[in-house]
Image 1 (cartoon, rainbow, N blue to C red):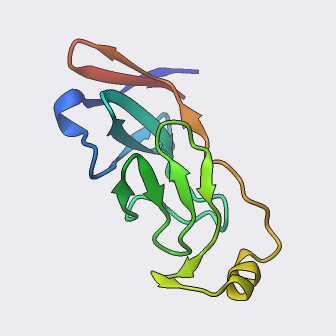
Image 2 (image 1 turned 45 degrees about the vertical axis):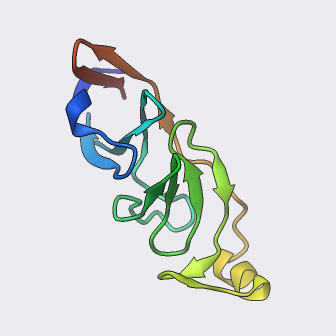
Image 3 (image 1 turned 120 degrees about the horizontal axis):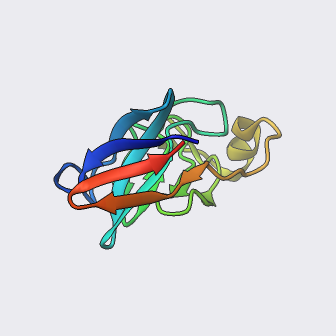
Length: 121
């Protein structure tokens, strides 16, 4: 693993995830409470980027199929629920999931030195 600077404390917020690269890995960095957090920028449903999704109350929503992930742990909060923002009925959700089970997103520990944020990837 390589310790890589990913941002400064002034660049992250609780309302918009910051897309960064660390050692070739695309990450989303955000602030949850008063903690800096980093998760992979890749939805485990179809591998699409989470970076254009919403960050609300510490949860990132996949903009493509509505899966939700805790921005501080990567844990799946809700699996596939929509298509491009349009909520699907339960049967449609099951079909859109294509047999894939709910999966967490990789989470990376963030350390802070002064105003600089680092991650080991």
